Length: 221
Image (cartoon, rainbow, N blue to C red; front, side, top):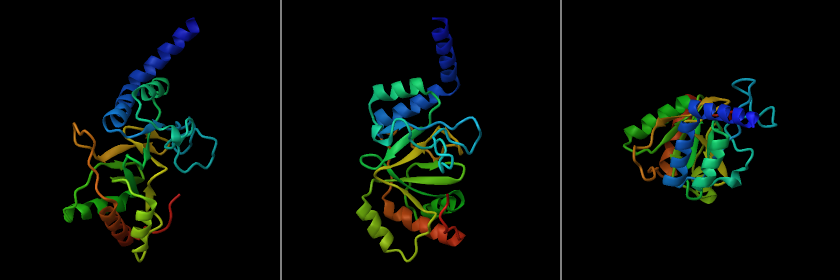
């Protein structure tokens, strides 16, 4: 019994350190905004660039699903509470597509330029998720056919542009992953029933232009 109580005290201590903020955010995403989420695999203790999954060359350390898998993503309050009560420091991973937003991701510097270009054009933006190296602009759900037609119409699509659509995932704030802190570059408006997000077309146009101007065209690992 002492061992159980001691373990419980350690768990409660961890919750006080970082759990409440994460569980509250996960519950907001799942229950208020109806975005299906699940816990990401934690980064291991070896340092910033290592992941807790079995892949020694993981390219998104701590920022992806592992156990449970992506198909377990849910908006169920009880399941979300159970996950983050047991894993209070786990990153929050969004299952993109379906009824949830998708995202267009690009390296941080051209992402900042793309946002500035969209602002100049008067194009309204929704939330933007920022990691240490890449930013992700949330957009309305799109189909693979819609995305394919959009990209086919482009003369050139930089390889560093990434898309998080149906069957994809994205770490959400205030997660901390093996790559560093995940934060809002453009935060959702307070009290949003569900944050508004733009269509993918305008975002892709600005992202391609920003990447072409900065010469960031090679795929990033």
